[in-house]
Length: 499
Image (cartoon, rainbow, N blue to C red; front, side, top):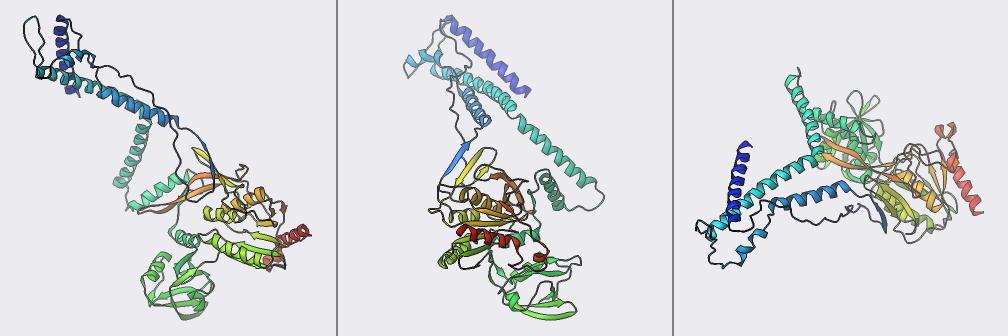
């Protein structure tokens, strides 16, 4: 750095000498560097990328980012200062013949074109050096926040290296980093976190709505056994007689004690043809022969409760739930349905796009179905449907109805004037993105909050029912339609509405 400074001083001294000689012949001196006249750039708004789901029309309320625009303007100006010099003193040069240029001095020395060009190059070089100096100072001021972040990251790196060098025992570096990342998520909201591998596999299967496998959900108990949690109807496992609570002790003669559910799933995926499982049920042990098949998970069930009342239950908003709902709705309408009950009790959410597509089957394009809000803007999302249904709708909810279920209930309550029965919903008013970190696993990260059509944020509050009805012990002991007070209240409401 000192060496560059010395070079600048020497060059500037040479320029001063040239200027003195130029003055002797009454010529304008060559200026070292001048500030260009730059036009101010017009600020432009950043445009949000398209959402992953389609909408008929979306109203965007932009929040401008003046800081970014200001920084862009500064950068442009800096570049011009670094590469611009005043050429007004070179007008005489332009008027001379191209082949040779001579400038007379009192000492009768002549300068040919090569020497003049050399002078111009030197002046330009000085301008560049000064321009870079100005640019560096402005960049340092503008990037102060980035320097701060770098220092914070350096603090983390220093502590990480200190732990690796000084901790007395063995360290799993991946676990160390994973826990550090989890620590960052812990400082945010409750929904931003790294997903446990077993939980991730189970959740993704449900959200996808289909997979190839045996048709069971499993978990590891406290003794390290692989235990059957769920058996899907008409699946290979169900046909082989496997039941909830069974312990899978062997896979093709391989003992499974101590194996994780992920290891078992991988063994199933990597084996072709028939699979032999040893099953332990109470004190009995038997073999079950199964094979992988394509499993379609039904998240929608439907039926006619009477001649005029249709019923649709949605257990989760999977990728194929909207198509299953459409099929069920058409079937009920074909059977003469005059009133509909939609049951989302116990539904913890799922794909927002699936919920949106269901709402588009019930509401036309004049209706708002929800809003989303992040740091930059608020999006008002309208239905892309063409018809609004005319029959009355009741939505059954409870404390476990969350997220996408609340989007459905809120939109139907405010835009369709549906009647909500049950207890208040969970109150999850945020939207998460699912991403993956190599070597760590998948994680959820909250990117925005969602609002009901009228702009209400349900976080921690939930959707309030129009009629609060509690379930009693009779339903807990014998969960039938007759003992379901919430369902019976919905049936009565529709009967009175139609009468």
